[in-house]
Length: 99
Image (cartoon, rainbow, N blue to C red):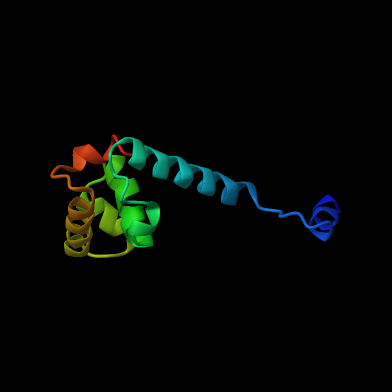
C-alpha cells in the first residue's frame, strides 16, 4: 500500500537493487572524473564492456569471463582491447583502481 500511495502522489518507487546499481554506477562516473577521464562516462561503454570490466577488475581471467558471460575467450579479448583503448591503459591490473 505504501508503494501505491507514494506513486499516486507523484513519487518514484524503485527496488533496492536498482538503486544500488544506480549509486554504484554514479560513484564509478565520479571515480572516472577524479582519475582524469573527464571525457568518459559509463555511457561511453557498452553493457557488455561494463560486465567485462567488472569481472576483470575482480581478477577473473579471459576464459573465466567468457564462461560466465557465455562468450568465447577471443570475444573477451576483443572487448578488453576496446576497453583498454577507451581508458588509455595497457594492463588489466589498472582496472582495479577504477572500480
